Amino acid sequence: MGLNVLDYAQKDPIKNVKAKVYIRSVTLLGDSVLWGGYGQQPERLTELSSDERHITIHYAVDYPSMLLIPQYRYRLNGGRWTAWDTETFEEFNNMPHGDYTFEVQSRDAYGRLSNIASISFSIARPFYLRWYMILLYAVLLGGIVYLLVQYRLHQLEREKHRLENLVKERTAEVVKLEKVATVAKLTQGLIDRILNPLNYINNFAKLSQGLVKDIEANVEDEKENMDPENYEDTMDVLDMLEGNLQKVGEHGANTSRTLKAMEEILKDRSGGMVKMDLNALLRQDQEMLEKYFEKEIAKYHISIKFNVPESPLMINGNAEQLSKTIMSLLGNAVYAVIKKCEKGGTSPEIALTQTTVGRMAEIHIHDNGTGISENILHKIFDPFFTTKTTGEASGVGLYLSKEIAQHHGGDITVQSEKGVYTEFTITIPTL
Image (cartoon, rainbow, N blue to C red; front, side, top):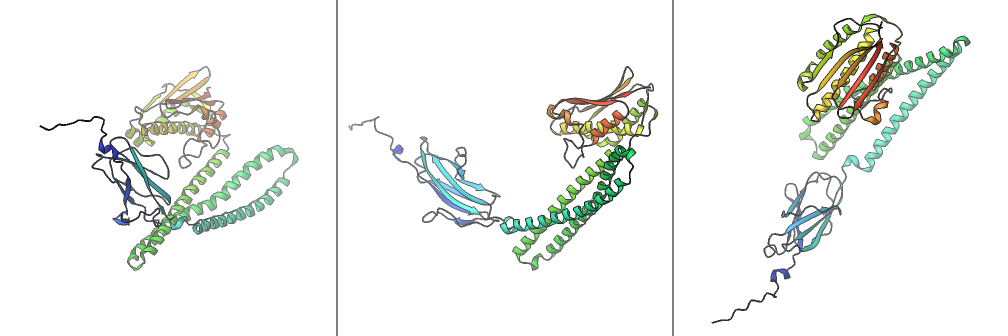
């Protein structure tokens, strides 16, 4: 019989094997090989073009079967390591231009870390971000700004002389009134002079966008007769030009909206005050609200409630101005509840309640929308202040609403809690 000896002190031979991780290959989209794993691994690959942005890197350890299934982690440019996993490759898609260093490390079943294998590569800048293109953009922008400034200075100089002559013609008895009127007239004149060329700019931007699309169609028709690189460059330039024209149109429209809002501020609201029924006006506004926002009310299931007494409530007011104020506040309420619904809110509600306290009529407009932050609540009646984007509002609606209410001998106040509710209260003296 033989003698078997079991030595527990003898170390596991696998523990004496320490794996080493290697980068096996680097390929581009379409299986184009940048490095195939043969010979000495280069520290840095040849610079890639701006179109070669889809890279796959394969890696592995030298003794995977002895060390069970190893795990790997990697990082780019010395960033944070990824979580451990058993994948032996990593794909990088749509990588921006720049320099990159890929590092990978393995861990065996005993938790031992291997060496760190690395390889560096770089992706060239696209042509439209080369220094000469950026310089060209700067020169073009500088030239346009210079021409606009010179044109505007010339206009202002002429306007200055005209206004100086106008001021000299006024009499000393009405100096104060003249100054106020002159400022208003100045502003209105500037608005008119800016709006006219601005309308041309907006129209030409739209027309130019159409021309760019026509050119793109023509280039597409000639694609077979063009060099592929010239075709791609031409289409890139046309896409960039179309985007710039779109921005010009958007900013032009926003500027026009702001100037028209300034015109609204300068309007004379001193007339048109008559004896009228406030409650009848509120019922008319309810009909307008439900008709104007019919699609939004149906889509978001908005509950509209008007608590208005049937009996007449007589005030001295301008029906058009008051209706504009109330509809502006109701429109803001619809906007707020829709925004909350889009963020996951439910049961949108808008309520208008008319009450009388002493000789003052009160109109309460309540919504359970997004609310207003406490730190900006005191600013909402300032001219041109808005929480909406420039493409959605000019920022004078609440300012004009407060001015109209004060012109009627009343006021507008607001209470709100962010994410919960907003309530505006309009007060108007009764007869």
